[in-house]
Amino acid sequence: MDLNYLYKRHQISLHMSDHAACAQARGIHRDFTRAYAALIGVERSRLGAAA
Image (cartoon, rainbow, N blue to C red; front, side, top):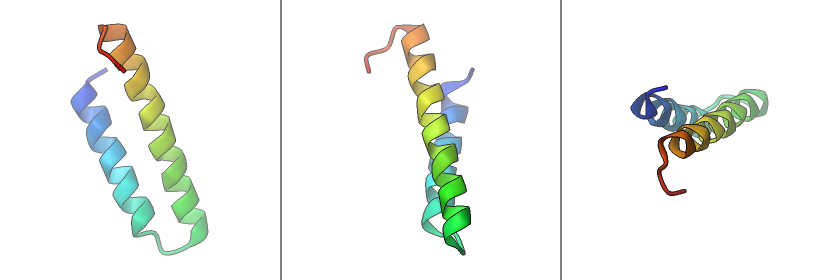
């Protein structure tokens, strides 16, 4: 998977969480942020990059 794409989606999720209209939307975007962070970690590990 493309790390640049994952980093971009992670940043968008952070932004959306910070500007969400309600707590439910904020939580959903935080969940996306955590999921993208996990995918970034997996991809970095697969590529042999330091944590």
